[in-house]
Length: 98
Length: 372
Image 1 (cartoon, chains in turn green, purple):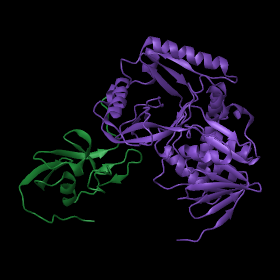
Image 2 (cartoon, chains in turn brown, cyan):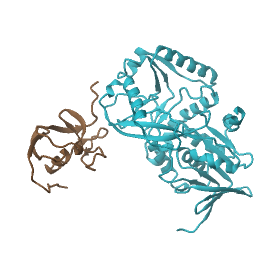
Image 3 (tube, helix red, strand yellow):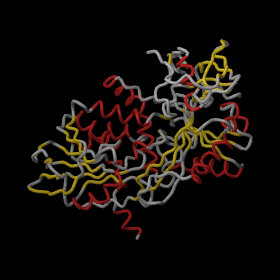
Image 4 (cartoon, one colour):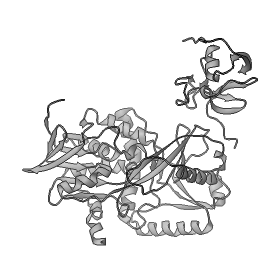
């Protein structure tokens, strides 16, 4: 499935995903921005390493988890894009810094 | 509206939670034509709110028969899950690494040692435990907080996913038991040695009856000459996001599931039939978990829920066959997970023979009348 923005108006915001530069539109969620950029795999499951991406887009399913500015397990559908965000895939469990 | 029907069977089990499902599963294995009457998704279902411990240590501290019954279930659990896996392909996530109960002071640890020591003395057939000091606990669980003074360890303890257990049991009985959901029992008549169990539309007829309806047993038991003075005790549980494995074995208050989530619980509230959650209980549960495991400080809670334990006046189960209505059995307990194995593999075969296992003689409800 491919996603397109229905509205293209708005201030541009620059962020990086896995080190690559990416443009988003102010006011949209991080999950929406990545889907519009064609990202399919947001995270890899802890148990089997399977690929997962957004499902509910409303904060319930926890499938869209990403590492945002070094914080793990962030629900990207609930986070608005911000200038300079550094975003990576959530690979497996989040750590506990033990 | 479907027309009413009458269904005949060898045995009718009322209650499709973990207790009723385990018994129906065991009865069907004995070759009995079994009907299982369940309510709907809006039932007060303790099975769906359970913490998931298969727990032995400390249980039955003033009733050795209960300690033994619990222990015998823990002993059956490995075989029980193996059989369920073969029959249903559902892995219920059971493991038996032993369990911990933390003590926060030296005095508490000493009291715990005395209590478990007495239980070991009173329990024929052995009751194993170890008292772990500060260093021992840290060696076993590196993430434990400085405030933890020690712990009791019992090798018979384990944990399991209660949701997967219920699913496995329901799948196992799918083709063997006449499972009838949405059937609230409205009346039970006894005619010519057969129980006529009436629901809103239908009647189910069998010479044998097992009441395993949790809190619903209070109203049903008197219909067949039994007494089930059970009341709800609410427990609240918090579950966190998935985090890297840090806790291999279950503790009484905190356990990490196979999936990586952390469950925290063990609150007790007397609030009637109210399954809502409260900020104060959540805060107490989370604070205690943080004292025990400071490394969880920035971990997010993703869900909380409340559920109702099925509690008798002394906290112990009732197992009883009616004297006035022979063939009617009452089963009620608040440890539907821990006791699932012994319910399926030992209790059900006895009920199929028309009796209770002899080791359950002390669990009749007349013990409450004596106390009054």
